[in-house]
Image (cartoon, rainbow, N blue to C red):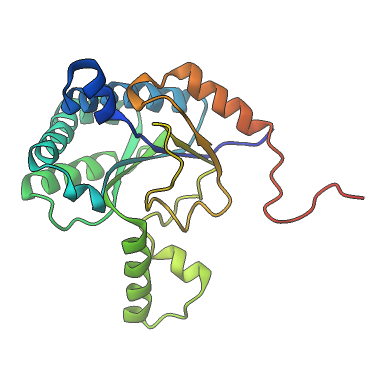
Length: 229
């Protein structure tokens, strides 16, 4: 069976779910956060080393200001209330994406969370915040130019936000939407992709287990021909 080191998730459908349930998008975001906690600890149970969560894209700045403010306040409250427990549970927290346009208050909490948990190794949670893959690729290229390094695959990958992280084995996108939405475009070259109809707050451990089991049975050739006579 295929080993699973890294799972990436586009947690789509929170707002739509909130509208359906209570005509309130923010209610969906709050409920979606509860699902994240379940998925994190179930990933640890399955000995998955990396989990990358798409939480806020560079394009999400086009959303209503009230919703953006709610999302960032939700993140700050989560860090305030949960970071000590995450640390006790040996969870490493990292934030990938641009730090531009983030408030000093949030940046301080991010820095504290990363420093506190940096030596933990049960699982690394990459929070893709203010993240856009196209911007990431351009930034990596500029870094190579500034450092006067040869433009090689190895050097390029060392300058991505995801440096020192293996490429995802699995990408899950909920919300019945079949696109990547500018997420990990370089890193997903040979990732197995699972599109789920369920909106994120309805996604559960049973769904997660089904995907993990299906992945383990997939024959992965990475462009080669194996066991062919």
